[in-house]
Length: 157
Image (cartoon, rainbow, N blue to C red; front, side, top):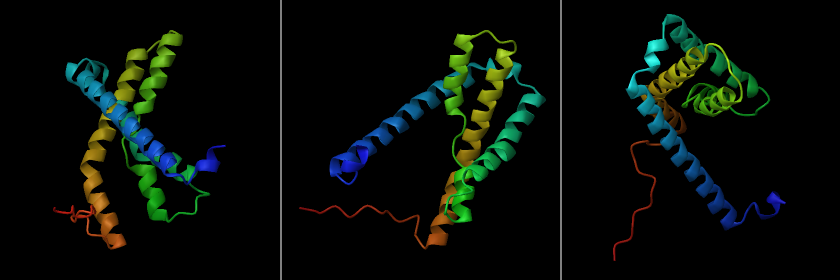
């Protein structure tokens, strides 16, 4: 039933609106995440093992899982690499971990929360440091000037 109206303008507007709402909610979650980080209690649980796990997740597990999941995809290897490696990772884990915490009692929950939050924190920092240079590299490879605006000039009346 969804494919019947797939090409309608309203369908595209609705899809764009859904993406905008998702981005807005992601920003709200990131602000709340920043408040938790600013509190400082998270780092009381963090030790070298948690940081090692977080680095392993971001540097090995996530890229490998992403790459494997894209094996049948007919995209260039560079696109597969970018999709597998870049972006803020782990925000969905907050929801799932919160649900699990409410549903049952587990030992070591503060350690699990600290690990998830450190993964997200490192992911945000890594994304922030790498996204601009990587996007410029991609634009250069495509022959696009990333410093020029793609918006059409407004008419003056």
